[in-house]
Length: 188
Image: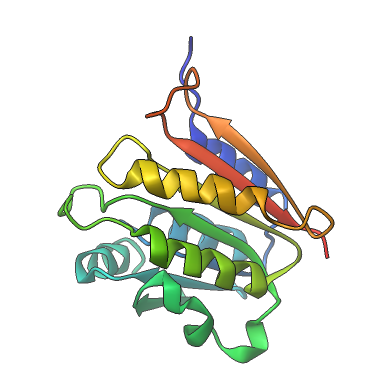
């Protein structure tokens, strides 16, 4: 069976919604690849806010985005998203991306934490515009990732279906350790 790129699926769905001049959030910068993808969609007049707790992730993103006007990097937990996004953008964010786990090429002992991720997801749905999209890449195959993924699944299931819809994608044959992509859309 051919492997499916979950990142490509996330990017495809976001590309259908996020346009020039839009506002987006990369909730977990990592090496900045998703932030640059978002910037390419909203440039030259849009805005992307990027969050990470690791200075190495901020530095890596800065190195990859030297000419990225409209990119604001925030050295803070995604759980503090609502406090760090200017009030005038609340309810107007068209796309939010989460890529959970650890920083590729970084310290694998520093991982996203279930509690802060759930706080961030609740903040994100409040920041999201009607007809906005949120993607969540979860990795149950590493220590702590299994619990985080299960909690995200439960969180998605408890959302009001009159306000939100969600889909789940797998990269390979469904298994407990395979990465999972959740795509959430806000309707009301």
